[in-house]
Image (tube, rainbow, N blue to C red; front, side, top):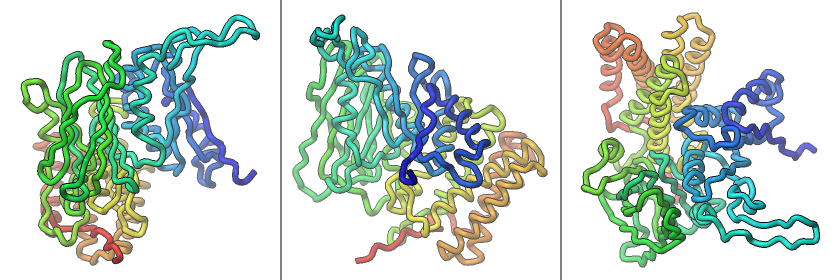
Amino acid sequence: LSDVVIAASDENRPDQAIRTWQELGKADVAGGPSGSYVGCLNVHAYDGLEPWLESRHRGFRSALRRIATVAGVPLCVSEHGNADSSGVTLAQVILEDFHYLQPASWCYWQPVEHHSSWGLVEADFGDAPSQEPKAADLPHPKYYIFAHFTRFIRRGMVMLHCSEPWAAASFAPEENSLAAVITNPTLGTSKQRLRLSAFVPKGRGSERRIQAVLTEPNRRRLFVPCEVEVQEAAGCLELLVELPARSICSVLLPNVCLSGTESKSLVESTSTNMDGVDSPGAAQAGKLRKHSHDDQLGVTVQMVSSMARAAAEGAALERWLGQADLQTVRCWSRWEHECGCAATAMDAIPPALPSADSGFSDLLEAVCAAAWGAANERKYGAGNPDAQQAWDRFARHIQQLAHRAGLSPETTNDLKWYVFNVSWMMVNLRWYGQSSTDHTEASDRAAHHFRQLGGSDNVILRRCQKKK
């Protein structure tokens, strides 16, 4: 039975799955110091019999995903179902799970149910064994909502990093095709824009037949063809589609490939109202980074800065407000976004990371460890064991990064103290305010090492050269 994978623990709720995993760790069964007997972490997407929604329980999905990442096991949503026959709730749950949990697989409870809207198809199983089952109702609209995911985001595709939970995207490298599922959860018509920041057309002048379908469940418009505009802007592709209220659209875009000249997040999503003015988040999501070292692309000092700021602010907010607070959740989402930007600069497709020997994983671990070192020390004191362990991890991963990336002693020293001081700068900003001495002194020290590292566009971690 050595090749049998044990899955645990199929809890009803993500918060229960966190507690169970912690208890399994205490029993040295899962994630303990001597390893783990559990090879897959399964969870259901329920809140009792209601759907698990991020607006009610913020942060628990992300916390569970971090547990699975640390343990090195896949995370799977092994069951979800709900009574909303329209499928609007189903789409919301799937997209939130994709965004916050990032599962390896996602399963619906039961496609056919006896006189119940929990099924994608409602049936009459009969009251006696001799009775033949028959359809009691044609497929509910949520059958088609589910098909928007299963027919477009197919097994084996690479799930892409997306900055908002109302959209999901995946890429098939062998086919050079990209699929996107875009929703309008609002009560009014909206123009949704999806920036595919790391993708360009494959071959100029090549034929591109876009497949796009729309489902508007409240009007029973099911899988109808729709118009999607594809634009090339700022060196990348954009999808623009006008969606009715509470509708969903799926798009298959052929003949695309990863850009070899830009280092940006893979997917940035913004919504635009009907007056044509970008929403407040659009300007933030739409910033493009320019690099002066196009022949030596990789992770720049500015990318390290963005990651360190986001991680330190996330750790400080979690210690200050708790992991379920909306500010904390948003900040950790920003951290993931910045990590995705940096991974793309190394020619990886998030959530996959560059190779272990590139030093990229050590950079992430060092940045995150410094954030928790500063936050735990400020919250609990310098003698706190968690703070001390975080600083030990920070020093260890900085040294491993220097070895794997071939950094000079000078660069290693400046990088170490830059990340260290940025972490303290952000934590002190949260604790004491912008005018505090602790914050300004850490900020000044960080600025000094930033200049020593060569400024924003200098490349710290170089992209691996591909063999010809």
